[in-house]
Length: 167
Image 1: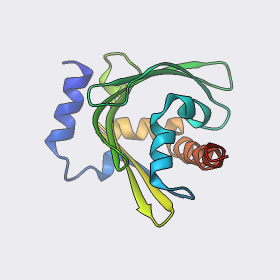
Image 2 (image 1 turned 90 degrees about the vertical axis):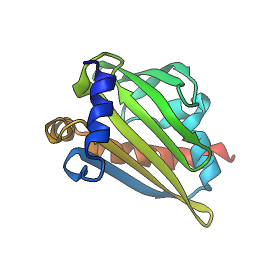
Image 3 (image 1 turned 60 degrees about the vertical axis):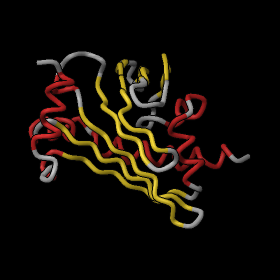
Image 4 (image 1 turned 135 degrees about the horizontal axis):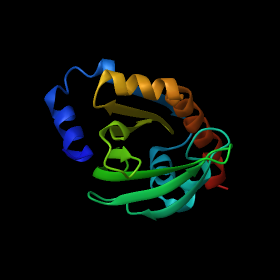
């Protein structure tokens, strides 16, 4: 079974009870949601803030539309490259993104489902990223790899980058 099919099966098997296999990162950002959505979906912007501290990115393609793909390489501060592929399933501007995130291979353990919501709170945006993995064990592996802190750092980098978009 391909990683995509395995993930779809995992996501539809029990979507009501995913707490043991999900990671959630939220941050209130001091910017309107249209701007935050643009930072998330425009390759000119996302390359500047995506990833934990010390990481840089090379974008290969980014088509933010249902069925569209974002392929990029994250370059770690230690020189290790991490291939990434996002396939968009739902794009509701400026409210929501739903996608599958993987390393571009066909390995199920490298594939997870993400929902990003952009909730307007006055002139601020509550951004929530919810990643659901195929199993609790795979989720735990990502936690051990540093995914929780990496998510916090990524959203902090986004918060620091947003003011440059309005200057």
